[in-house]
Length: 463
Image (cartoon, rainbow, N blue to C red; front, side, top):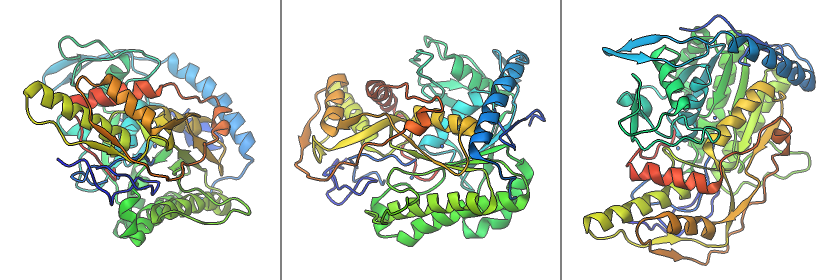
């Protein structure tokens, strides 16, 4: 395996030198609803390719009423917790206390990096989740009826499992600690609160998409599907516009024309956002352009049609799961070096890092999902919210973490790239709604490395 690739670039364009639906719903902000990002990085492996009109009212009023109703409804839901035994494939699963589903959430791109975490988080939280995937595909978390240990882990729980997977039918593997969030997710699956639906956002899927929205009648939508790698966008710019921009518009139109108003969170990118007054459009690559147009189109549908749309703009997402960013590639390289040391085989070649001084704001994907949850509950329609850790980290510091945590020596070659680091991201608007990141970068690295040691989940690009 080669870990170099001079022509590859990260998603920010910087080149690197390495390769039973419930009828109980709550009304938030005048809509029926309950109450998913690009990952940028610095390395690529050459053998691994880089994935209705609503009633108008002031956003502040909607957010205030939504928060009040959310608190009231949360108390009502807490009083209706249930516990039951469920038989799945002949095995009895004793579900721990699982809240009744109080709303239906449709997640597009449910097989992707952020999408898989979103399915896990919201199902464990009691939402009835409809996982939208590309026609003909099957989510990796449903292929074998097993759940990876990171799938529902939260920073609050402080619980880690040593098992490689958990059965949907319950119980941790022998020797593994119990993870309440993981058990809640498994229970939600067993209870039928997670379903998988083909979701065609292409030009040929217009009628089927409208029918899907009409059938599932979501209370909220988290739109995470799309193309999210910068390098391939140079050779297929119109393809990126088609998927990221037109696919989003088809989803918005399906909701608008179906006549089922709901809150829609569109996952943007720190590399592309709606233009502010006086700001010039100067995208570094076609991917960035597609995300800028996507955000502008989504917010325009709010302005023109009164749709309850919010754009979320995460920074560089890291953490365990099917990713193709620098963090994941470093983890896979470290795991390969450890395996070679144990087996006595030849170690992987040198891992080349473009620069030790370039900086990124790394945000754990699980914190990003919590950010989406905050926006679903309290976000103001028609606004764009940035999500970031608030700390710019040199790439060399990330590499040093892997050197420290690896159980085998790592051979890293540091380049002298003079690429400009992105500016720090201001996420104060989201923090004012009560969100804050919980995972440290070290926790994210530890979990990603553990996931790579288990050989889990090859990269996924488009959900």
